[in-house]
Length: 103
Image (tube, rainbow, N blue to C red; front, side, top):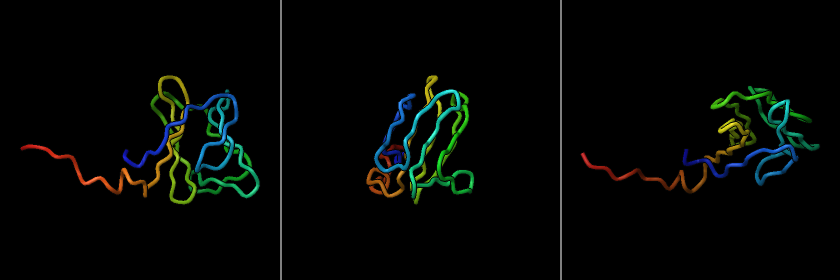
């Protein structure tokens, strides 16, 4: 959870988000990433170029895509599709030394 660096709510307007390839939007096909030449995502173990269509996502459900060491959670919460990129080297995660607790 500490590796999540952003939360982006998708709309019908294709939008580029920092650190992620493609223009992301949502509609009847569910979340979609339109990837430019030279951009790709790893989805279900396969490299996807061009257009990545994730299909309708059920409430509280999700899919993942990867680019390098970044994993992008594509999910639905509160009836809306969203992206939550996870960066394993993010300082909030690497600098976490536990939560003080009492017996």
